[in-house]
Length: 467
Image 1 (spheres, rainbow, N blue to C red):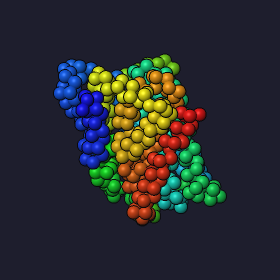
Image 2: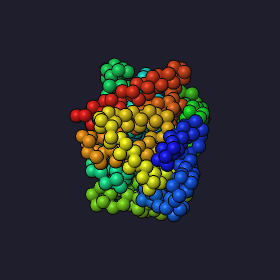
Image 3: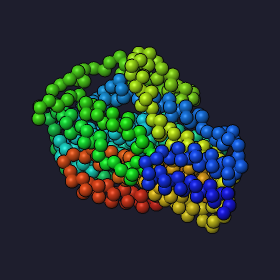
Image 4: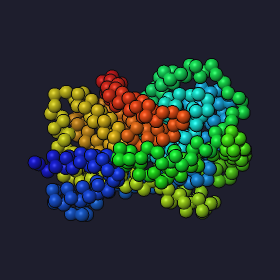
């Protein structure tokens, strides 16, 4: 077996092991980079470490550090309350508010599972209270998280754009961002009407919309849906942070429950604090400085985080521990392994092999299917970090496949399947559902996840590659 085939087989084995066992794929990737680099390619440790993505590491640390502070000082809760109050008595608007808030969170740098962990308990609580289909509500939250996931300052967007830029391919950051948002909005619109949205539009709730008691969002939600099939997705290894976010999210609509059926108002009904105002200004500044002035997002995010830390040092202390270290380990580990493959010439070899096939369009479709299927069970970030580099030589040949369109299609195909109950987002929605038969709800998520995995690659291929 050639060294290139060994490297590819090791990469495939990583996905299998990370799916079957609760082991961070980044750890596996670092070991794989060391073994393949030294034993197979004869590389020195310095050469292997040259593939470590220092810039991406700083970006991920900065963004997740800033977002953790925004959650801890109540900024996220405050924004959710504003959004919920804005709907007044319009029940039909609640699913779209949850979609929009989750999209906003991921678009400004929240890790997708963390955003879903914040919003899903609130959304499913409203669904139980007002008779909204829980499957529709849960899916709207997930599609919202994925819809905002490819903004230029987001986690997914940062990974994808960096990989494409390093490959020297043409890139349109906004094309990928709006492609993801547009597809997820379209899917959510279909789900809204299929699962009773038209009926909701004819209903109304009291103007002073009561909020959900804290009880339904307690410990049972935090510990449900565990097991190898869940933790095979390395994103879920940030479970300690998500558990904390779910516990805090019950207060996001501004009240806590007393005795059964009795609600009491809390200071959450008051206006924003100085810390929350500063945090919102900081998030706006992050977007302006990185998008308009092209400053490094990692340094800017850490700088804004430092300013917020000066105002509340205790919040900063906990935020350091809430940085998504497992997620970061995953991403930089896979990127380092891909760097070894590039130095070995494996990426070029794969591209040349693919380019020799008679139909570039069929190759593009197959790659989209691979991305969707693997991501439904493993980590979306790992898929984005490994499959896009494998497709680079194929795209550079100019075989009739437009790189910008294909990258957008691959980005959406690799993330829209996170509705699967075997991914972290799907598992969080399953765990947050109230007053439902869990077995039935699980089957519904599995059926929907299977449909998306099979249909999405074809639709995206037609929209962004063929047309």
